[in-house]
Image (tube, rainbow, N blue to C red; front, side, top):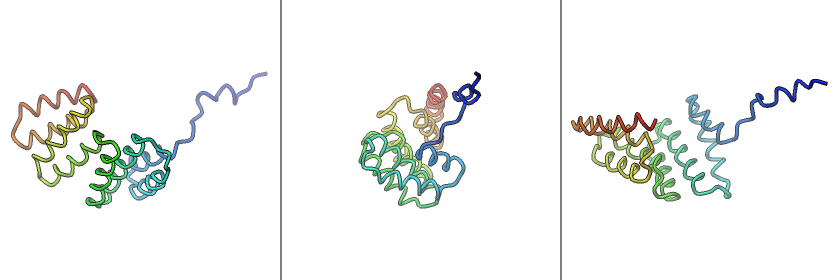
Amino acid sequence: MFNLGRFLAPWRRKPLTPYELALRDLARGEYAQALHRLDTLLEDETLTGQERAARLNKRGVALVSLHRRDEALRAFEDALATVPRFAPALVNIGNLHLESGELEPAVARYLAAIAADDRYGPAHHNLAVAYKRMGRTADSVRELRRAGKLM
């Protein structure tokens, strides 16, 4: 006998994990909800270092979007305290510097992110933006090309 439920099972959507829900909230611009979910997730003492760093980094992203820059910086620094060479947090700190017009510290953070993970495309892309603002066009083009290959 044909079982439609069993036949359709491979195409059935699995429920999103709590972390995936937080990422979805960020993507939808629901930053307060994402922050709440991430704070709840960070209460889990069984998280690996990488998991904790990723959640702290996303917490910082939510805080930046809520215009809570100082708290965001602390979240990014907490991610780095957990995993010292965590490229996404290094890039996000660089972004805070870039937004403030602090080009040299931004470049330093982007270079640190690239040293930590040369295949992390956003580091190359944002370094290209910083170089462009500094008038270093050739360096900017080189980094954009590298980012394009990685992203």
